[in-house]
Length: 246
Image (tube, rainbow, N blue to C red; front, side, top):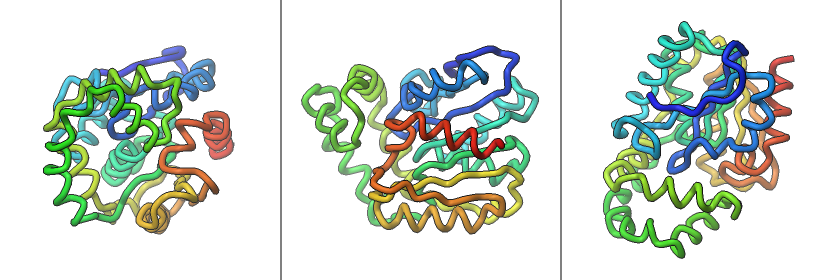
């Protein structure tokens, strides 16, 4: 599994799982804040830029990350964080391995299937895929996702690297994922974030996840949109990380 690593190797390990269609730079500001104290590891999610595998399913990607943690870190890390698709993969990891990390942050993770959206994904992506590498279209996409302008070159390069089939695969998996009951066995302390300006289904998902994770806290960040916290408010994000470890 390909990944970006930052900080001292003998430090406690923090694994960050980026959102769908994004890459390591999802956490570019967190890297600067965390790498002096921790060994920060950001795997390239399957089917994304820098990945060594196509995307098959959230479950398969979760297994690959668990195997990576087993091989490189003897099956346990201090912290795992995930945004959106990365948050769903983290949910799957926690549902399968209740002791893989001591702390976790789940940000804006969909845990309730969206069957109508699921059916529309393949045809809509096939129609629009040819526009992805047009810079004007990429800038519109960035604006709709509230990604800041200084990340444009990263965003443009890495979205162009994702194949049409991989887009369809991870977006269909995202829209059909449901949280597993085995999360009830998770031992990690978890913070669940959802933006105050996110869709109602995201807030419903956050409440469901909170009900399944016994040692969790749900925080609604007012006036924030999907992914806003980790992408645009790294100081606040890291403050919450520090708080949960105290």
